Length: 434
View 1 (cartoon, helix red, strand yellow):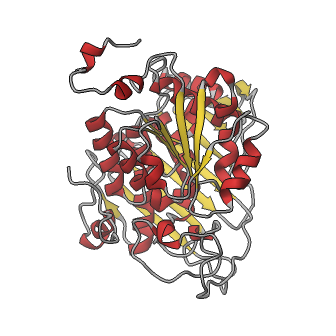
View 2 (cartoon, rainbow, N blue to C red; view 1 turned 180 degrees about the horizontal axis):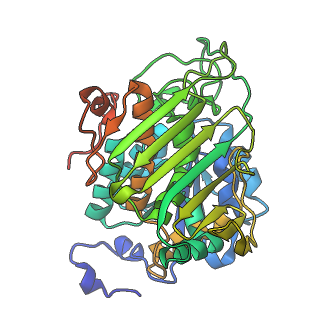
């Protein structure tokens, strides 16, 4: 529905501003920041005529990523988007309606709040924040600016997942009490980082963004920032557990845990450059006796539960197994009583991923911006699921079992752990005061 100008308080709007008040049928001007491995998820939703979007900008801190991305988009769109390395120039362009934020983890929340402050809607890849405080900031700023913000937890838009979660909520397996979320991959050894000049074409200052400044180390910018300390990445838990923990929390209808306990460590390639855990078992306990368990194996591809990733939900009268390929529902004896195989395809553990599920989620976001659909997942949901990842990381880093406030997830029993609720920021990059 398009509101009349008077309903929007039109006094003081310039003629150009009138043109950017979006109606249900208006074309959205989109900018993508971050043109790495996740880029493939955006080709189809942007290329679909029914999406009615104009890709206005391609933006990346690495110069070579932009022409490569433009070339890849040629089979989807019949025009050339602008290529701009400086994200601030992109965000300052008043013609941009939407930012797709596919930057590294440490840029997710800052890029999103910079866009919100400039009047943009934001689709931000998971995890939506680098630390718990940033998640709180995004939820508050979304409400302040009343823009649509959606995280890339694309399984929330999978028809089969939506179907089986609704059935669980309606009592199909009795009372759901436990969810096991898991991920198995065979990531190999990574190089030991050594000091060197930044690669040609990389704006290292821009890449670092909110992180405290330090010299460039070999191979940081190209994905291995995930494993080289906590300045840029959030470990495998932030990188991948976000998806399955989101499904687990959705199924059990829980928000903030009372307790988080973790056993984690680096179990493989002891001499390589990977500085974080590569194996984690985490248990989150909630009120009313509910719990979620996470089994994450980054570099051991034994498929403990029959596939590389998914979620198992246990109920008093049965069990559901759900992943990106659909679901199976079993009664209490273990007999399958219902299943629904996905009609679409979505990448599992392949780098970057993408597929029909991502397309559905991004199109849902576009339609929510226009007021045509309800979001399949709000940023509040995304931030709450991401918080579970942060709490597991904090427990791992401090070696402590965390007791948390079930109203907001804040850590109650450790000042050392609560000190990791935020991070050290480069001067001028701290979250906006609220």
